[in-house]
Length: 206
Image (cartoon, rainbow, N blue to C red; front, side, top):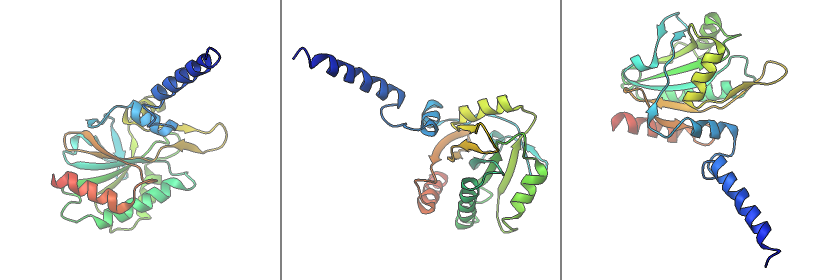
């Protein structure tokens, strides 16, 4: 019994530490940990000035409607474009009575050093003229370290790889209420468009 006790105590300590570090075994990646570290829902969406593809400066908190926000960078080789393709389908599937009067979509680039207004305007144009209430934006008058802090407060983890132009990042979609509260967070890697759309509609109608 005496020989068994020390290993059991060591195991219990390890389990307790792991439980604390993973928020009760619910955050096993740096993406999910950063999201949990930002706080429980509903919570205030952090404020930052943004500038869209038409050079208009705005704040999410001033929209006073529901806003679906995601974060990308234009040099992303794959996942960002795949998520935006799905946002295009979501935009088309939601009733025109809701977009843009009750809901807008905002895609924000976090690649402050490489993306600019011309690039995001050209990128938005690739989706055609039939998308409704969907803006592409950049942080405005904010340096990279300040914007990195904004991303962490939102719950987004983004870090450039040591070599090359790759930025590893989380791909969550944030549904912001007219009161500037994050009320839903969607993981497009785990949720299909139908489920996301139904939850958005439920929030707006509710």
